[in-house]
Each structure stands twice: as C-alpha cells, then as structure tokens.
Amino acid sequence: MASGNQCPGLGQLLCDFLHVANFNQLNHVTNIRQKILDLVLSDLPYCTVSAAQDSLTKIDPLHPPLEANISIVDSKDLNINSNNRKLNYYKADYEAIRGALSGIDWNSELAECTNVNSMVSIFYAKLNEIINKYVPHKKSGERHYPPWFNKSLTRMLKEKNNIHSRFKKYGNPMDKLEFKLLSKRCSKFAKVCYNQYITDIESKISKNAKNFWSFVKAKRDEKSFYPGLMTDGISVSSDGDGICNLFASMFSQAYDSATSDDKFTLSSGLRTQDLPRYYYLGDILRIK
Image (tube, rainbow, N blue to C red; front, side):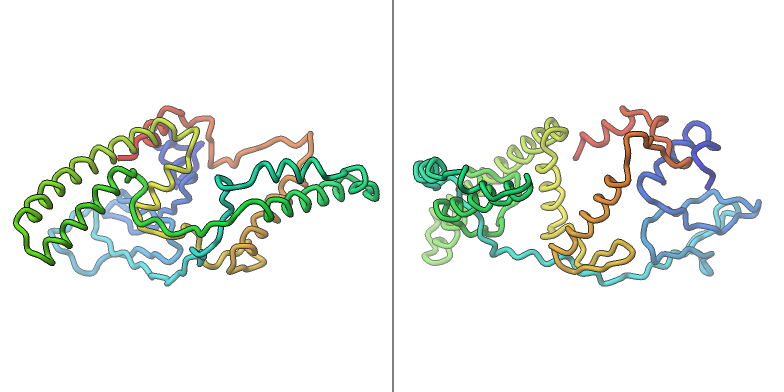
C-alpha cells in the first residue's frame, strides 16, 4: 500500500483509514495481470492469506480465490471483582463531616510540613479518614438488565415473571391471559425504551461517552474490555494496578520529555488534516 501522500482522492482516505484503524493489508496474491485488486484488511497478528487451492465457483482471472488462515489465541480478560464495595454518598452523615472538618486545626497539622507535597498528603489522609468514618459502604452488584431498561420496564418484567410463575403453579386461565397481555406491553415498551436510549446517547455522545461504551459493552455481553495481560514492550502485568502503572509510566515519559519548544508532528502516512470531520462525525453519532 502506498502512503497517504501518494494516493489521490478516495485512495488517500483509504490509506489514512488504515493507519488510524491500525489495519494491515494481508493479501499479496496477484491476479493474471500481476496486480492486487482484492484487499484483506485485519488488525489480527496471526492472520495469513494465500491462494486457495479449491474454488467453489468459476475462477475469475482478475480476482483469484483466496484462503485466509486465522490462529485463534485464547486471551483472558482482566478479572474484575464484582464484589467491590463502594462509598454510598447518598447516606453519608454530612453534618458530622462538616463538624469534623471544621474541628481540624490545619495550622498545627501542617506546621511540620516543609513542602506542598507533604501538605497535600496530610490533607488527603485527613479527608479519607473522615470519609471512611461517616460515609457508609454499599455492595456493587452486577447489572441484570441492559442499560436501556428503565425502572418502569424492569417492574413490568418482574410482574410478568411473577404472573407466569403463578400460572405454572395453579393453572388459572386468567393468569395465562394476563401474562399474554403483559408480555405484549413489555415488548412494546422495551422498543420505546431502546429507541429513547439510542436517541439520548447519540445526542450526548460528545458530552457523555460513558453511556455509549456501556451500550457497546451490553451489546457484546462482556464484563471487561481489558485484556488480562498487557505489556509496554518491556514490562508485563496481569493485574489492574500493574496495568494502570504501565500506562502512567508511558504517558509520564511522554509529558516529561516534552518542552515548550517541541512541535507535534504527524507521521507521513497519517495526515489527519486531510480527513474531513463531517466524513466521520455522522458515522460516529449514529449507533444503530
């Protein structure tokens, strides 16, 4: 593939898209004219493309049949403990918190500090001590419904399940009729909730991207987006704290090495100034 500087028009957009998406063109099988017309794009590290020995249809000399081999690597996701306890600020004793904060003599607490860092450490230590004392904890359970289910819909579903259980137990025809009616109502209301949720996250994706990724995660039925093993090329980590430290170390080196005289430059292959914003904005805002 040629670089973005050598591809005019749509070809340049394609080359830039490959760089942005980190795709590789894996097909090197030429046709009868010794050219490559069919592209095989992938970001998988263990994928190879070769000429197919058998063909299901008549072979087109300009488009020879291809065979792609993909090695599936069993990768484990990062184990996220769903039994983590979180602070419940809704039930915090704010009167006691205000009293505790007002009773601290900061002059005496910070008297022996010689720099700002030690002052900040003492401040956060006192603050965390008060929070842990007056803010109760709650257990964060797993979500049992998709994020577009609201409280009204979940109540309707629970009522429907209760009626179904009652019908199976007693066999009352009225329960069966009520169950069918409630099932239709739940289906219609679920579509309304879904459409409202999609419209909401599309209109607010630039301000609240968290809802968008919650939607994607629910669609994929995944508990974790993060691999269980990550490396920066030198160190390897398999736990949450270690992975965060790898990212912190990488970005801290980038910012520490930057100076006011440094100028940000792009690689020759990636020319984002040539990418029209409207070309991608519509695709990003539409999620359906």
